[in-house]
Length: 435
Ligand SMILES: *Cc1c(COP(=O)(O)O)cnc(C)c1O
View 1 (spheres, rainbow, N blue to C red):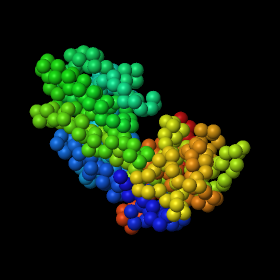
View 2 (cartoon, protein in one colour; view 1 turned 120 degrees about the vertical axis):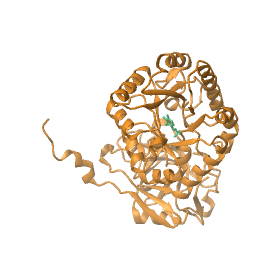
View 3 (cartoon, protein in one colour; view 1 turned 90 degrees about the horizontal axis):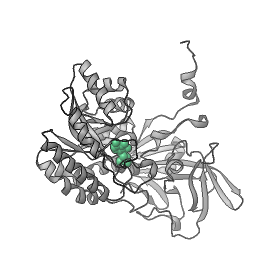
View 4 (cartoon, rainbow, N blue to C red; view 1 turned 180 degrees about the vertical axis):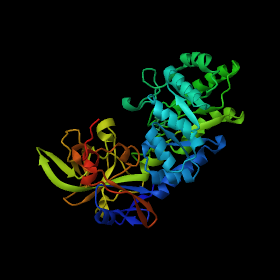
């Protein structure tokens, strides 16, 4: 569900014609729909309302301060994984007691900043990290709350690079070790170990792996409570799917209908439930607009060479991800219906294309063997579902400035990040200093 749609062969976002926008503001360009972002957040809140969860938006999925501010304004907390993300959350006005801080490699400086900011929870990934946080909190005369990240050893059936809840990943500790963890650290006075955290991976296209993992976590919590450890919260992580292809992902209500019953008792007994969704909120709230530079035949292959690529959206290269790509202006017969964004489009006159960028890497593509309507030099293509893990992973490789970002709110367009310049590329290099 989003607010990008074709009308009379032209792609619109809310009240804005995207072909015209690309001409006026330039490409490559990330475009976000405010209404879509808000709708996604509101639907999630509604679906899980019975648990009254703290929703900590995963800022790593799409971290523009202006977008985070919109979510914070609706009551969202944030899931951060670095000091830089904590800083972003602060800039966006997020309430610090609604921050959860995960990540396997927190540095002393990052930990001190988070303690000073009085964040809600440290999500702990190892014994060594717990000891370090407790000792820094002691030095600072502070008391922090900590959740132990457990590794429930379920298979979320997602890409190897985004599977995080199986035994052989670097994240969390396994369940047997979790009990020993509490026995060892459960009485610490500076880091109060009071919650269990899990994040099984992403995207996870069905509720079952969550239910399995939560059941394991609840069994652990019951045992811990039996041993008189106080457990105040369970954080079930993120990873809910997004529709990269129409209809691919369960709805928020579908996830909730399975997950809510497993947590109802925990909640009714006074426990707090925390969610850490990222992509499911951001992915379809953003698109990447890019312009066709050249068409080139290579053997029997048609290469569509664009002014964007892996340096702006690395998901296809990194995770073999699918993004629906379509011209912003098409003949009536090539207009995709609402909810019809698929790998295989059943329309006449499509041609197989390789959609590639200008970067000097053969991994620089956004689509392979993709059937597209006829496209020509100068056409604007829209790369859909690019809101999450798009701009946040963009780089300056090959010294291409990163794209601008704009936010659409009905008919209004606001630049929320200016396009980088060549000067930006060298700004940190111009005055070498002796150390
Ligand atoms: C990445 C991550 C998330 C968010 O994942 P999505 O797929 O964007 O929902 C949540 N929690 C943790 C700990 C993460 O690392």
